[in-house]
Amino acid sequence: MSSMAPASDRAYSGWRRERYGWFMGLTGWQAVLCGLAILPVVLAVGDGAWAFAFKVLPVSTLAVLLVALPVRGRPAVRWLADLYLYLWGRVMGWSRWRSMASTGLASRRELAALDLPGGIAGLRLHDGPPFGPMLQRVCVIQDPRALQWSSVAQITHPGLGAVDDATRNAYADQLGGLLAAAARGEQVSRISILIRTVPDDGAERAAWVADNISPLAPDVVREISRQLEQAVVAAAVRHEVYVTVGVSETRIRRTAQQAGGGVEGRARVLYRHLQEIENHLRGLGVTGVRWLHTEDVAAAIRIGYNLAETPALERARQEQARGLPTVTGVPVGAAGPVTAPPPAPRSYTHDSFTTVSYTLLLPELPTRVGALARMLAPAEPGERRTLALHYEPQNPASASRQVERDLWSAEMSAEVRRQRGFRVGRAHHRREAEIAAHESQVVAGHTMVRVAGAVAVTVPSSWPVEDHAANLEATARACHFRLLRLELAQDSGFVAACLPLGVGLPSRSWG
Image 1 (spheres, helix red, strand yellow):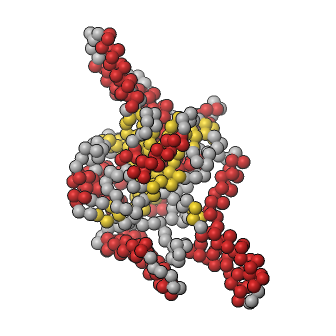
Image 2 (spheres, one colour):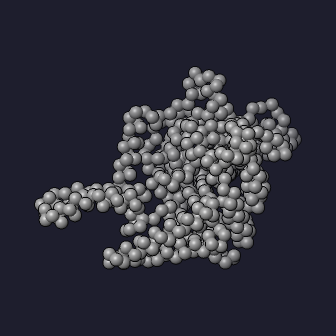
């Protein structure tokens, strides 16, 4: 949720945490575990067994610290559990990866199935029924783990650098309208926007020059032009923007059965929302929307893992546009990386590239439209930066219940603090004010949206990746944002930040 300043200086604030602790910042399970940890000490003191109390006190104190002490976004006990799972996966060899296509032993059936490492190994790509007036085949992504069906569009947008404040505010209003419409429909479970700033391969420019160069041009002019193009292309970048729309299996199951059942029935239900989303995207200034078919989605995944594939794919697209015989896209079985060693604790290596991923922490200070643009500017040629924003609109009834829970939690926390003699601080008063603002917005007919951001920087493995990660962190601080490095989960962070699959926002049941 956000509050808005006057139209000439629009700002967004009022971001709320996923869940609040009702006493001293502790969640329910943390409070229960802390109570159980100190219970032996309390019982011993009550019985006058002071010697036993002093013996148990260090153990109880250590248990409370492990449960309640936050360390870089996670409790200490969660760090221990994650570290154990990370080391166990390395010992058992579960985190080492090699694609079936690279072995040369894969059958035709295996090459037709998606072959990806890690948490996205269960994804499936399906050719949906014809969509739109051109009867194009749109890829439908099935995520059995999240019970979600998604489609991906690659869009063309002129950017925000040359627009005025009024246009930016209009774009922001249109984005809010898109999310509100998705919430009212109660079937769209997630909308993800991913922007990749990649080095320009020069293929499009080379194709244009080949079509337009004069055969009478002097050799010296050709050589000067070639040198200038090399210098410009080496420093040039281009943006790839993807929008992923997903619907929940639990919400569409009955409607999908009425539409024919199976993959086609679910695809038809998903298609009903794609045209609406596309209309809202046009209002956001988007000049082109292309819903990707299966091979295009595989190519987007492949480029995410291996930047070196970009020039060949772009040359194939240019040849196809000129009517030349060529093969575009990527086979589904070859979409993933060729090899990927066990992920390091602080980075992820895939093929010959290394990625460092972060989660984007929403700022406490108000932000403005376009505040994240600087984070997408590479520090030097050859570097790729990506930004993904995952939105999960809540239906109005769910948002109303959430606000009621927040109000109850804030009032209970303040009352407990006063009864125990603790001071109700400024942060708690600010939280109460934000919840009151959320309540007024929900009463006015608006809704709430869960949002998560992921940022990543990718460089060749031979480069000093830590230097590039430090540059990204510095850029984020200059934009008044904070980044939290995804320690022990860099492979999952890579998926959330770099692949347009709509994966990246965990369910509310996760800690």
